[in-house]
Image (spheres, one colour):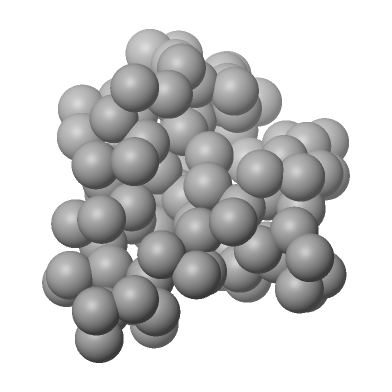
Length: 104
């Protein structure tokens, strides 16, 4: 579970990101979950976009993807979502070090 300060930091870091995960009319499928798993493993922090023809709202979609991948929903604004999951590989943890500094 992220604190509000951690969420704020992650939001600011992801501000310039382009979406890398797209969810369309099929909704949250096994393929979407696999893609999200791969992206979260490689990057820890990702931005996704829920297309207009998706069956669920962006908030519902973000919660479903987070629940199935073990990620945290950082933010949902409009049709964009930001997800974070700490890397299991300690050498690949680029954001967790920032989150620990300064009591965050």
